[in-house]
Length: 134
Image (tube, rainbow, N blue to C red; front, top):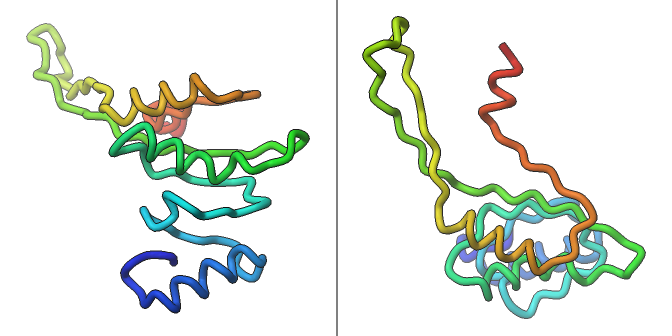
């Protein structure tokens, strides 16, 4: 972990161990927004985009230090608003229906990704995966 929840010395040690390859995973927070240089990083899971496009660019930029022949994989977890709709009178089962609405983070991510060279992408919707398991 690299966060304010542990001592600065331990956080720095964890970060350095990760950069040198002694740690395979590193959970971070805002502490890596500026000034971090992590070479060879080719996989990231971004919890969300928030705050500003600048912060999003900084987070995304951790992976942009690749050579032209390298490729990175980024998973971006984005929140949506979900609400239960009232059942229709003609619905015999009265099964709950849900509607999904984008949050501001989704728009930020969309704008950020438009300005980035992307070779391939996939949108994963948990509702589809859930339905396929039935």
